[in-house]
Length: 148
Image (cartoon, rainbow, N blue to C red; front, side, top):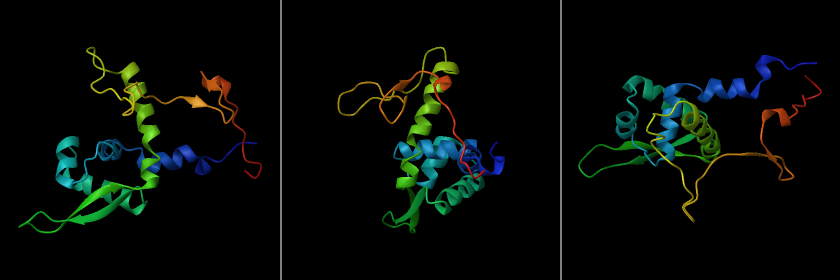
C-alpha cells in the first residue's frame, strides 16, 4: 500500500508556503516586521508579488491583518502571525540550520539564534514522544494511514 501524492502533507504545505517570497515574508514576520513597505524593503519582493503572498497567508490564517494609522496618513494594514503561523517557526529554524551548515557564507552564518532566557544557542532536533533524541531519518519508520 502507498499513499497518493495528493494526500501528502509535505506537498500540501509546500503548495501553501514553499515559494521563496513566502518564506522570506515569514522570516520577516518572525523578526517582528509587520508593515508592507518594511517587508518589501527587507525582502526585495516586487510589490505585486508581495501583495499576492500576503493575501494567501491571510486567506489561510497564517497571518492576520490589523489596521494602523500614522498621524496625518491614510489608514493601512499590518500583518501579524497567528497561532497557525507561529507553528511554522520550527520549519524556518530547520531551514536556517540546514543553510548554516551547507550554504552559509565562508565568514559564517549572518544570524545566530539564542534563547532569550539564558543565551544558549537555539536549534531544532527530532525527538520521539518518549523523549529519545533521533540522530538520523533512518531512525524513523513512516506508518501509512490504513485507509489510503
